[in-house]
Length: 166
Image (cartoon, rainbow, N blue to C red; front, top):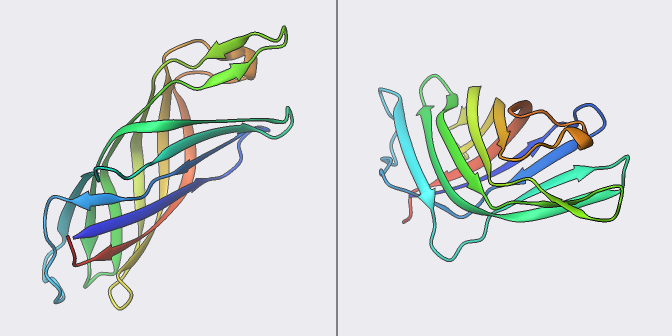
């Protein structure tokens, strides 16, 4: 089973964080028929698939991206109830470099992303889900010069498709 998912976050306090996550492969299979009970689908990064994390400060004209190193996700899908929610979302991102006022570069250090809350819908006819999520983003280094505290909470809407192929 494959799951592809895109996560787009809403702008917050003059800065926006946009995450894109795709190319995940599930470790559990989901039957093609409707499920009587909710199921949990666990995913990991698909080898050879690139995932990225972008941090944007539109007011400052700064956009920087880095590679997602590792992602582990569990999403619970209840076809009968038409619901979906992330039960686990854990992601490790390589450091981003941000330009400082003096022209030097400041590293974010490794970035970890975890889910705090998630709830949404699942359309069994199209095998698609949409969730409203609250992510916790933790930066290793001090980014107070950019108005970021760590950890910081970021609301998000995630959309994705579940297919029955591996």
